[in-house]
Image (cartoon, rainbow, N blue to C red; front, side, top):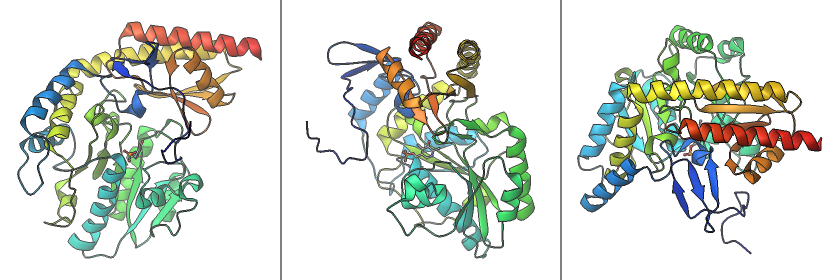
Length: 392
Ligand SMILES: *Cc1c(COP(=O)(O)O)cnc(C)c1O
């Protein structure tokens, strides 16, 4: 059938009418185990009863309020995020790309307004993904993202993953910041080692530039710490997050230190919908649940078990899988055959996962997934490998 949707997405025949916990269910009642989680968004599964409850409660009280007024749910969420991180201030928006836009503007304003220096350049990693706005695609620089949309925004420069020397070389008197995903998501679930994050921090301090972390995908418990950078000894100056924080309700946030926040003044940035009562009441519940030590301890136990089992499957099928990557429940299977063939076979066996660059299959279970469902997924993964292997 001819679709009225702009052709920016691959058309899929698969559609769902319901979701429950780790499962998506079709109109005909067929169940799929959802380990894509709306790309790391449904962090507490589908229709989580606690979230449904707060959403319904808030829906009867107040949906939207302009930021011209004090939004108590937003104040509460900001307090929580500040307590859980390096940050002193938070700006709320509606998506990952917007949280990146905010980060870029805040970094520039810190230099241009607070320090009265004409610095604007931002150094990023080749193959990274920061969203689809013009600034975000300019930051990434990836050919497949920028083609057809030139001219790009000025002032972005990409260096190779793992090439610390190139970062240093790329910094000049106009450089404002370095921006990286602590774990490249779309880029192939590539983890930046802690020593490298620490090296970037040192470099930024030495050059008096800012360090921005894009935790849109890897933040909010995804890797087993509330923020992924918390596995390392260092802190960023600015952090963008979004995907998992609303558990499916659209909301993004940009977190900043007091030092950096001083570049932003009344009227210098804003959002109509950003941080509205509906989004913030849901996000407050998500953050309350995920930030609990018991929740994260349990997540880490489950993810270590799951990754160990995946390693065993890899060892049985070294002809199909070359590597298991990632941290917590942000996992990549590096495939030796086409990842899209692998993904299609997983879907046929009732397991939803998604692709990433470098022929990687991304596995992003809900963070509250049960051990039982992890075992079901492992059986499906093993079965799929067996089926592909028999046909080779
Ligand atoms: C998804 C993603 C974005 C963009 O988020 P949107 O909500 O799609 O705008 C930015 N950075 C990273 C690391 C992402 O994974």
